[in-house]
Length: 233
Image 1 (tube, one colour):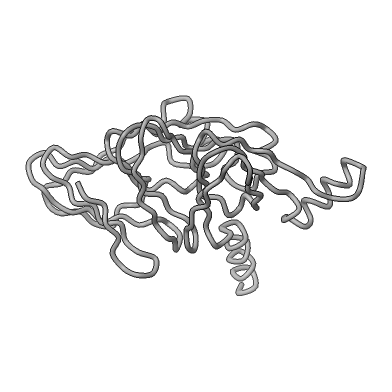
Image 2 (cartoon, one colour; image 1 turned 45 degrees about the vertical axis):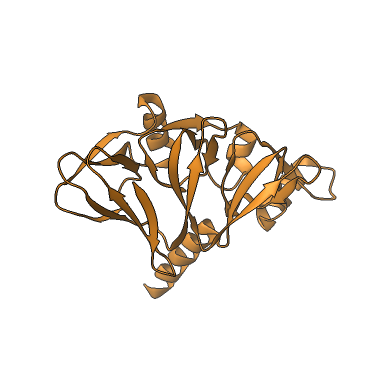
């Protein structure tokens, strides 16, 4: 099975399936598939996780899966927003966590689970909400990020401080710490200032691993679209 990118900007993900191959992909990401390939759906990350994610994040209850039973062929996938795509080789020893909307596709050997985040990270982290997607197993994964994706390698002596709105995903072994950085000693004033400025709330990744960052803020883009739509009316 091959994962390839087609197009130089906002690319398609092309996956060539041989007979017996099967992939999982994000709901509504399928653009086209060759005759002979079958498209079905399964519960997304377990019953309880799926129901909770639907209730709190308004995400699809299902993940699509595409398989080749009698004939090889190609499937084309694309993220919902203009995005870069990165193809990763995953192993059981190095699972990754993805923020909301960052998963695109994976081979059958990958387990997809919905995990809860710490309340502080969920409330103030900027993306992901209460739930993130954890991917574990041996196989290939495609992730997407609004704009362009880069990876930053983290070591114990060089932690990374980021705005979580630009975080696509991270290796699970990294630790996270949400910081509210203001000079005011009053906690409520600190929180108010942080919510106003947005970038004062930061996420610090520490340990040994990798963080995947995108160049555009999806939430700001959505707010801008709503504003422009409102003005146009």
